[in-house]
Image 1 (cartoon, rainbow, N blue to C red):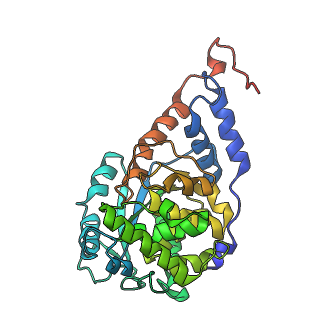
Image 2 (tube, rainbow, N blue to C red):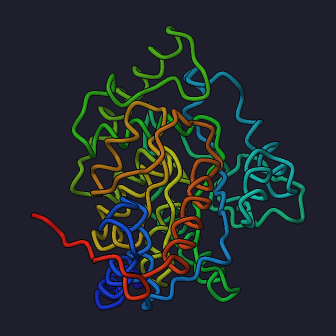
Image 3 (cartoon, rainbow, N blue to C red):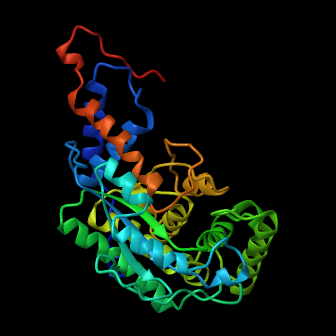
Length: 349
C-alpha cells in the first residue's frame, strides 16, 4: 500500500506539447473534442507527446458476492466461475470485442466462490466470495488491502510486458448491488436513485435489491470520507482489485480506461483514496445503469460513448480503442498549417 502514497502528477509539459501538436493540425481548434483531451492526457501519463497505445490489455477481475442470497440477481453465482473460465480461455463476450480492437485479455480470480480448473485463469484469490453486505461487512480490512494489492501488482506485471494502455473489466454475479451501495454513499443519493436492474430483474426483484442496499448501508454505517472502509464493508474483491488497477495505473504511469458502472465505482473509490488518480483515467461510456454518469462526474470525467451499454467484462471500455486509434491517426498524420496556405485558427474566448 506504500505505492499509493507515492503517486505523483503526470507530465504537464508533455500535455502542453500534445495540445500544441493538435493545434498545429489544419482544422478548427478543439474540433476533435474529448478525444483531443484524451490524447493529451495519455501524453502526460507517458511523458511524451509521441503517444503509444499499440499494446493494450483488458484486465477482467473476477469475484463472487454473498448478497446474491438476498435474491438480487437473475442467476446463481456459479455463473461467475463459468464465465471467468470462458474469458480466460478466450471464448467470452470480451474476447470477441477485444480481438476486433487489437487488445489482449487476461482474467484474474481474486474472489470467486469456487476453485476454477483453468490454467489460463490468473489465480490471485483473496477470498472465496464476499459475505452478505446486507447483514455485515463484505470483507476484512486485510482482505480489502490484499485485493487492492492484486490490482497494483497486475499493473506492474503488465508494464513489464510492454502494455501501454489498460482497460478494466469485471465478472461477478451480484456485483451491481455493492456498486449501488457504494455509489449511494459516495454520491449521497438514496438507493432508489443508484440501483438499477443489473443483468435483468423484475420490478419485484428490483425492490428486493433496493431494500438490500438500504440494509447494507444501515448495518455497516459507512461514510464517503473513509473510502477504504467503504470498500471493505460494501464492496467486493473484484471491485477492490479494480480500485488497485486505477491506483496502479497512476503509480506505474499507465492510462486506465473505465468500463461501465462497476468499473466506475472502483474508479470513484480510487479517486477518493488518491485524487491524482483521475489524471490517469479515461472514461469510455456512460453505463445504462442509472448512476453510471454520476460516478464519472464524481471523478470529473466525461465519456464520449453514450449507447446504453451494460454488458460488463470490459466490453464498453474496449470500444473506446477505435476512437483513440482514429484520433491518433489524425494527431500523427494529418496536414499541418505550416504545410499549407490555410490560415491558422485562433482560440476565441
